[in-house]
Amino acid sequence: MQRLHGLIDRGEGLLDRLERRTDPSHAVDWQAPAFRWTGRQQLQPVFRVNTLPLADLHGIGAQKDALVLNTQQFLSGQPANNTLLWGARGTGKSSLIRALLHEFVDRGLRLIQVDARDLVDLPDIAPLLSDRPERFIIFCDDLSFGEDDPGYKALKSMLDGSLLAPPDNLLIYATSNRRHLLPEYLDENRQARNVDGEIHHGDAVEEKLSLSERFGLWLSFYPFDQEAYLAIVRSHLDRLGQAVDGDASFRRAALQWALARGVRSGRAARQFALHWLGQQPDESA
Image (cartoon, rainbow, N blue to C red; front, side):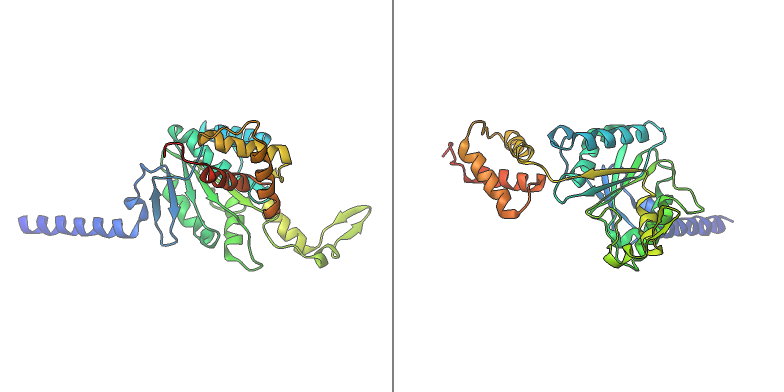
């Protein structure tokens, strides 16, 4: 009898080890503020997150307010929307999502970054989170799809259309330079029809609209004007301890930097701030 109990104990230990190998939720370090889905059925913890305070994001006040409000509703257990942040490159879309973690990590917010190629795994990710007390945002950065991309249908189903409801502690925030996430072609507009004075899009356009419209909240981002761009540069330099108010050479150099890149964006402003700071003489030398 004693031998039988020993065999049972050994069998239970073996089953436990097998479960830990096959169930990724057993191996997750849930103390991490963020995670990456590796595409190998694993959530990889990220302890050093590339983020910044919400107050350091300038020129996108309306978008910031809308996304913060939606996230606060989510953290409070109230209804909230999956969100698409779309528009000009380098205008702070992904920075805004990462800044939410800086603001709300103490309230249980966690980010999970999932690459577009791994969106087919969404049905495997959701069950890992359903029983957790934290509130998770799946973060899809720079999202776009090809015509036959399998991740397209997986995301579409997760947003709205699957028989299985997503967990209450899960939202999807995605960024894209494309409003409808798929390439758009001129000949697709020729398929539109006029029916009793109403425009009816062709099937190709309707299919593309059907994904983006499943995001409940759309936030649009536009290129910055000259003064907004300069204000963002000053903000970066202030945070780095370099005052430039009234410096005409700074203003001229910052504008030339943006002109050379063909864009006034938050990304260009940050890159110029680093360049300008690196060019200044070291007063401690």
